[in-house]
Amino acid sequence: MMEKNAKIYVAGHRGMVGSAIVRELQRQGYTNIITRTHKELDLTRQDVVERFFAEEKPEYVFLAAAKVGGIIANQTALADFMYDNMILEMNVIHSAWQNGCKKLEFLGSSCIYPRMAPQPMKESCLLTSELEKTNEAYALAKISGLKYCEFLNRQYGTDYISVMPTNLYGPNDNYHPEHSHVLPALIRRIHEAKEQNLPFVTCWGDGSPLREFLYVDDLANLCVFLMNHYSGNETVNAGTGKELTIKELTELVARIIGYTGEIRWDISRPNGTPRKLLDVSKATSLGWTYKTELEEGIRLAYEDFLNNPMRAER
Image (cartoon, rainbow, N blue to C red; front, side, top):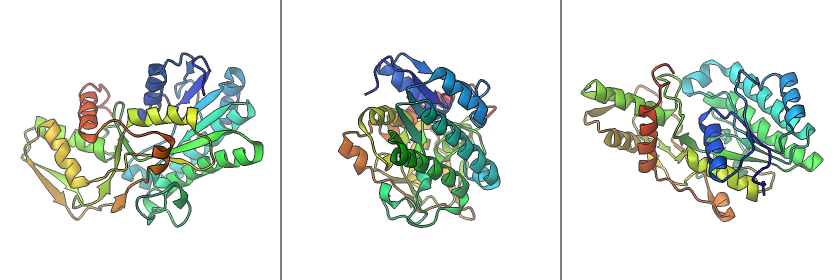
């Protein structure tokens, strides 16, 4: 268990996941949380990261920093996604190990699982068949981080763990028109349609793909829970175990925002993977379940969007 005054470093504290982990740690009474902005500490620079760890010597590390983006970004900046994520996580994990960090938790993504993995996806299906080509670069980097934690445990007896979240949403999400994920993109698009009194909104595909969504504060709660209660080489899936179609999701967002126009589907656009559901029985057996239902979570996310000063520029 982490002592309440233990020195805890949260990497990526300005992102959606990192900021949620900081909120959760504070809520649970942890008092010695250290953070650095990208300007203060560039995690892709090995020498700088090594110096930071040698000086600060954090006892616990939550590695939530990553270069992320939606489908377009993933397909156009393949090399950047692979290099930045691979180098960043290797620097942090290696320096944590060199400086005697008691425990590290690595945050991945459900996109690491094979494209045609049996549904719902168990942790054990990792590397059993090929990856989804559209985010292969990001997935390979995340798999490498997860495996490096596992190999350090095996070779040096460290206690490094990893957690793989499903689609996330909530406070501090990215609402950029081109670089955001499906739920924040829908919130923005439907909000703007309502503001502009547009008679209809056009969405990609036919609305049939099934997706699972986890409120980011629930993930943060699980992250702290695992840091205190889980050790093992295999990752832990983070999700709700529930899914809905993109069409149902779109209708739910429209209802919450109060948009009454028509929703049209552009079937010339790709649908993406038909289904991506995580098997969450491992987290459940450890004694954890999510708390925030989707409708309540979207209401909270929309509230955050309305109060988000960055949303116009991002």
